Amino acid sequence: MIATEKQLMLTGAMYDPDDPILVAERQAARMLFQRINAMTEDQKVERDRLFYDLLGAAGTGLYIEPPFYCDYGYNIKVGESVFMNYNCCILDVCEVQIGDRVMFAPNVQVYTATHPLDAKSRNSGRELGKPITIGNDVWIGGGAIICPGITLGNGVVVGAGAVVTKDVADDCFVAGNPARVVRESIN
Image (cartoon, rainbow, N blue to C red; front, top):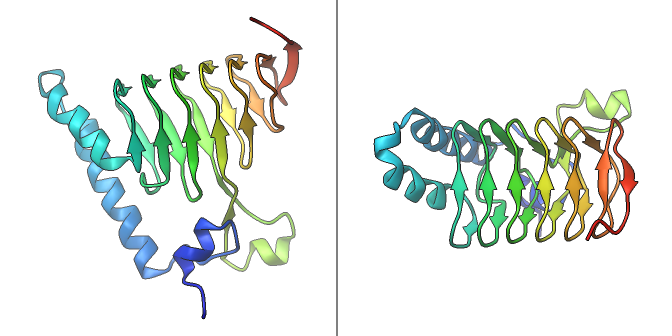
């Protein structure tokens, strides 16, 4: 059986982002988050409901400050009591799993989307992705970037402006570009 472009995307294989189904799904997500982003504070109850419609799964206590941006939305799965501050961008061509009690400061970027390093493959127009896992009780500082394929353990703190290019073990504080462990066992 031949895999669809969506199946290839979800498994992290090279896929065609111009596939009509994927284009339509990205368009639907954009229409929904643009609607959410245009809502005023007196529409917060409706806005919150629409965030639950946008995301693949979300526990209770989800709080997202608009504007918010994503590719598909359905690949984002968040636990209980998750907070995302202004201008969060999640490129979710693969699954983004976010644990409980996670906090994103403003301008956090989470990227599962990537491209081949080889120029010929990169210029083919095909892309790929790598899933991201963020543990429980994680705090990601303002302007931090979480790169494709990364796992952040439980209790991790990511400093403002950090670019996380490698997995981070539980209870570590990382900062810098590329992010490095500044302190272990922060609890």
